[in-house]
Image 1: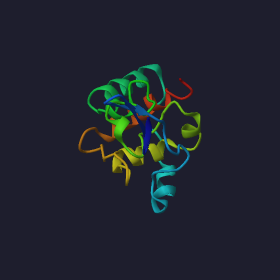
Image 2 (image 1 turned 135 degrees about the vertical axis):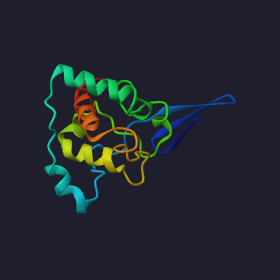
Image 3 (image 1 turned 135 degrees about the horizontal axis):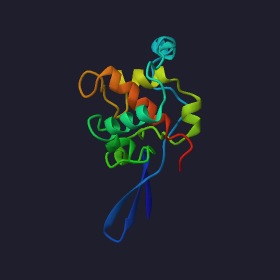
Image 4 (image 1 turned 60 degrees about the vertical axis):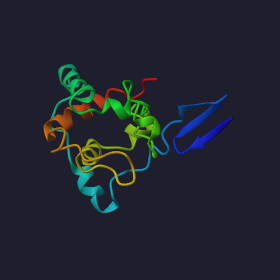
Length: 146
């Protein structure tokens, strides 16, 4: 038997419930409040996209930033904690997400969190503003991967 639970599907196999990730709910919808959207979109990433800077972003994503726990190793939003969140974490492999998000919007969400989601404010509590920009470069590197 299959039961849909928000962004997850729970499969009942005998007496064992198995949680299966069902994907991101709406990659196009911004998680920045409309009153903040213009200022968020205006923010520009001061860190150039280079192989070295993407590698720095990966290190932060996987360790100090703890992004991997929700967004997953492959950036699909299917990390261990992400499997139970509703809405599910962003899928950074989805080109629709990247085509509709500026770096500034991504930064705003990392800084302020996302209302009605599991995304909490990270800047100032977990990582610095500079580290957030590196993480965004790494998250951008997932685009189109499957």
